[in-house]
Image 1 (cartoon, rainbow, N blue to C red):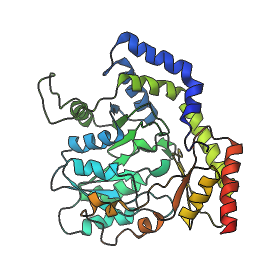
Image 2: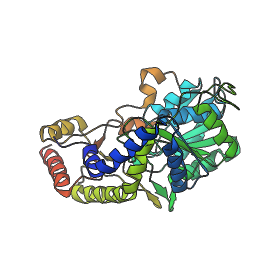
Image 3: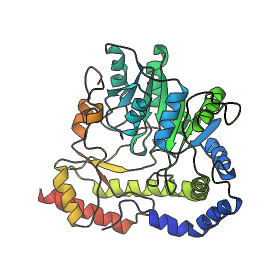
Length: 371
């Protein structure tokens, strides 16, 4: 079976440089907050166009650290998409607050601003913020969401765990919002060889608090704890890996555009809804997700043909046991309810060749023709 995401091909191409980068860390021995960490932070901040980049141990830690830095806690509500990975809502619960689930756009699967506005109609406390997820690599409508909450005293955080490299109107999608977080999980468009993440912001005071939260809430010295914090640091070896991967990142993003365009051209079937990129946006194509009827039969047939698939995500988050008590906006999440039973992601990575893509699409077409 072909790989769903081929990390080995990238590693083979970079192996010499990766070995050298890791060896440098082993030689200098600064395994925690070593020089590569600060070089990475400076490089990423410049790429995104923000004043500060605070690296951390994971994308989930990045979300939680932001919420901690903003003082979000028990009694607070934060609006999140009902269609996303659990970490978005999980971070809210980890600080003792409650997620409010809103619906998503039927085309991009990112937060629907009209649904978000409904969260202020719920009984109880008004939300203090909104977490906008750039799903599958496509930017959320963050500027519109900011306009929606501007007069409501709420902030917008961009959860860009899947979208480093995505753009809106020529700017990084991580340049929007009060802050943005990302993940360097290995399967992400920019991934390390373990867990990792980062937070981006422009506010100097917020950045200072985030750096404190990252290291047990340190104050003026190691044993002056100014606040409750985490062990949220990015390992130096992972920073070294990311610096090497950044050397080829722009090229790989271009390759992802080619792979996605080829899929869309090859599929061209009335029985398949292919992804659509909103005007002015550039997706980084963390996933290539189609929408079909009879999904499980299609997945089974593709698996028998040696083509792996994945489902992100099979149910609305509010139906998960851990989140079933959380509020949903008054009009519910009908789009999320509908698409969770129909979405399926095809193999997607920058090294996916045309021959393999033709194989995927031919297998898909065979299933559709026989149904």
